[in-house]
Length: 424
Image 1 (cartoon, rainbow, N blue to C red):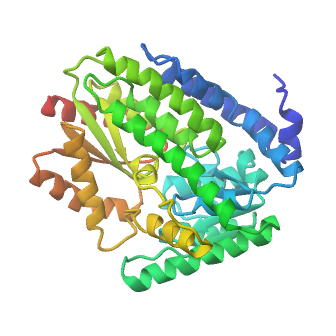
Image 2: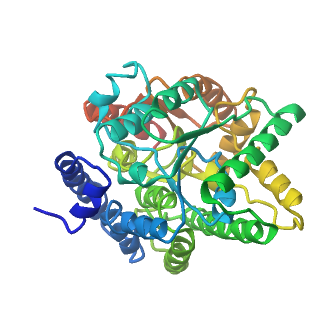
């Protein structure tokens, strides 16, 4: 069936047949995992609408923004300061993909033992499946892992790519490097947009992004209640959509969702009974539509009450200080905030271990599921130290490595069910 967006997608050079097949599978997957849930909050209807229009209405908005002279900047990582992009009156969108579509095309130019996330975004580009990539005036990468670094070299043959150097340690010289990189990004964004980042514009951009972080912090505080008032799947969806949606509209919508959550918490209403084991997810990010593991966990007698990941607290935990007056002071505030990100690319990475333990204790979880994408060496190796840190405080951990395929669903379900039974 023809879509009302076909003409727009065709102008973006998408493969309409393959793209239509992707949307059909995505719709069914979404229905099975999300719409089948009982007792969902009314406010989730907004997220359902966003996902139903994720390649439609939102893409049209991006095209309208470009027609009005604004630029679209695509990113793959929470290290790229959105404040800089917004201050240049550009639009920032996330480009990470969480599906196997395009895998065959990606494996023609990437090693097969490359993590699924990298193969996915490269495959989406090569197979002409992603209208976000095709809408970008600039794609900003970062050096958080060797796989990404080398993939961006290949990706730059197909799209305009700019790469930020992320330090691997957190000494004074590393902060100096990171400050230089933030300034270098500012210059490149100003060059692409033709607009200057002024103190007033940067101040407002900092406020806008902080407001989005604050509403997600509020959501995390509310979901920590007992009984748990919202499923982990639904909160994951909120976090995923935050990388695509207009930040001001998103903040307002999630604020309404939190108001509804507060009523539910006050009345003692839960999405599951009070005795259902509370679990926390930790590790690699989960991009749309990577919902496999959360669905397995919440279909195995447990509920997810927190995510320690880039699509979770790593993205929302810290705010940019808003007391800067000059441009330099605001840049310093941005540098300081982003240097607190505890990605597994850093060594040593005591911050992440401390944050995981603190989260597990604050959320009163019965266990932690550490999620790693197959071939993601930083998180796979750090899982050893995470388990050791959690063991000291008496919190058991299940370490899982998987990709985007459905082939291991039954095996994962058996392991998760056994873990849930053990901690029950």
